[in-house]
Amino acid sequence: MMSLKNNVQLWGNLGNNPEITNLESGKKIAKFSIAVNEVYKNNEGERVVNTSWFNLIAWGKTAELVEKLLIKGSEIAIEGKLSTSSYDDKDGNKRFTTEVVINEFQLVSGGSPKNSTDSE
Image (tube, rainbow, N blue to C red; front, side, top):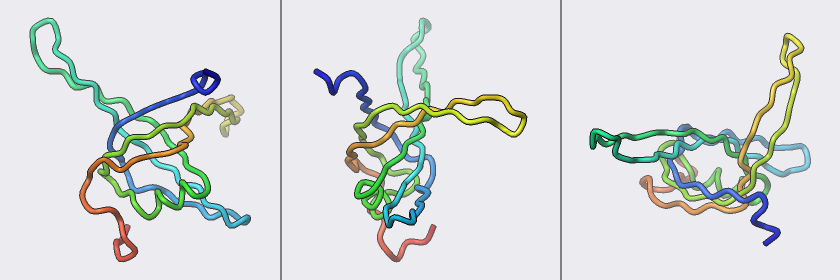
């Protein structure tokens, strides 16, 4: 039950190509966002789509797989945890950000996986 305290599962589409950063240690970080749609009918019976955007981050081997497999529009399912951090903006105001740190992901659809000949 301990793993349930901070566990996130999302299914959505990439809003952009992952941004890959190579660290001095040789590890990689991948940052990208996904759109998750919630579909329901309102009181008038009309179909309503509510889209929520989530910022994701992957580290190490997971980031390497993200770099190799994912492109804008890819449909993925992810499992991870929430991570919140803060920083001071240029005016000295404290700002907070929340990201989902990916433990694992699965490519659901979205065309052919990215390969080394794809351009960004």
